[in-house]
Image (cartoon, rainbow, N blue to C red; front, side, top):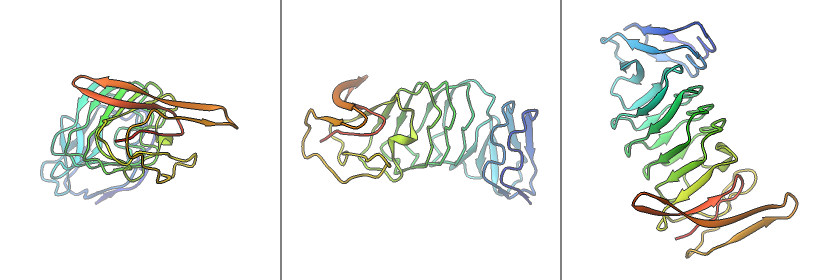
Length: 231
């Protein structure tokens, strides 16, 4: 009735999985780093899980549980999804782009860990939590567009590639300094200011600049340690 945590972790020869109706619990990392996995199918009578085009979801398609790691190209997450589960896309090195719908409120830990072909991602305004290491190891991910206010629970630039540039809407509220350990310092800028910060020990220099996405203006902070932006 259950598939335990790490049950098939790193099974590189596994190419497809069929989950029977009797399985009602699947543990964390059950199919993680199965680098040749192309499809996960579920018996239609299973009361807890379902699949669509080989992608594993919970029964009502509100949670994306696992995306097959060997798939290449772009993927649009269905609009029914509210939660991207822990480890859902980790190790998907061929994933070149992902569309996260406005319905999503939570991105789990390690959700996109090691997705090295991603170059940009847009995180909807409704996302209120991002788990640890959610986008770590995404070495090509250099543009992150955040559409909502901050700080969102669990958000830290440490969860992203050090080369990433973060884009925020000019009207977004609540963005300020994040300390080196990832804790939000509580600094909220009352109005937009071109601000420069220098950490003398590491000679880290950060400065705001403008960035754009079609039809939207953003303030941009390029930094692996600090975020500074304002209303």
